[in-house]
Amino acid sequence: MTTPAPLLARWQAEASSAHEATVMPDGCRDLILLRPRAAAPVWFVSDLPASAYAVRSEAGDSFLGLRLRPAACVAEAALLAALQAHPDSDEADALALIGEHVRLDPRLDEAQQALAAAGGVQRAARQLGVGERTLERLLRASTGRPPRYWHGLARARRAARALVAAVPLAELAALHGYADQAHLSRDLRAWFGLAPGALRRRPDLLVLLDEPGYA
Image (cartoon, rainbow, N blue to C red):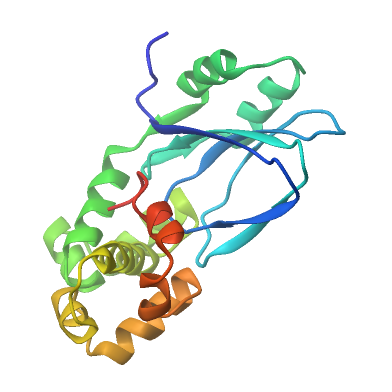
């Protein structure tokens, strides 16, 4: 089957014991099939979180995730209704329905790319040739999140991924547009739950931050 254009990545996981898994903000919504050990399977679409959060799994639970591109616009109610109408819907069904109920918005993609690359929301709006209010309306209508969310998330993800290198934190802060090391620390703690030094000591979380996502 042809991979639908809105699909960015596929993942799956199975819990061998009860535990909590950390989910990092990545700017993407995922279509997820949860197969609980002791209940009926359920499909759902994840939100766009502004901070890391934990998901609890019980032994035997399994997940299939289809990660959508940041510029994907999802007809969520119709997509989930189509999947849930057939309890035995599988990955092939989901991929076909993504092609029907998810579209990529070129204007949204252009705006997100500008916000990821620019030094701030005002500069991104100038590059796009629109006013800040127009940019705000576009992002909120399409994603439910304001431009500052997309600019801030892109910067934080780049800085966090750079923690794998032995770069002093003050230098890393300057390289990624933060006022100083304290600013970097506050921002990464807000987005990812840990200050840079602590995050640097968590290779398991750095691996999550390196998965496909926004910016």
